[in-house]
Image (cartoon, rainbow, N blue to C red):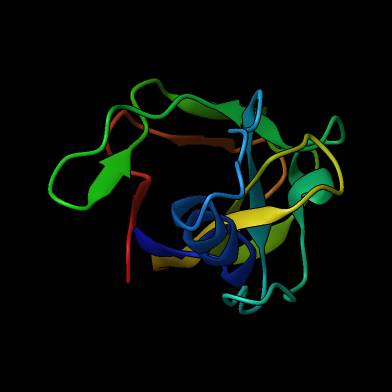
Length: 129
């Protein structure tokens, strides 16, 4: 699932290069979407349909070759409801917050109640665009 940096994060990185410090977020959180989540945000988040507690924490490995991927399983558990997932987004907060990067899932996921939803290690990939 390749993804790209959001406009928000691209601007923070560019500002950082000109001397305006950017502090990395204290955590990263994965949200699931049923419609396009672009560089500027938007999309329809269905995370709480699948997991009422909301987004799950993401553990990302070190960047290499202009990309990075999850270094731990991202597990939403058994789905509480049905939803179609076409995009993912990674945020700097468990709710609300800023979109950092987003992208389409490789294959549309038709989630039904009770199905375990998780991303194996290395399957959630983000890269600079």
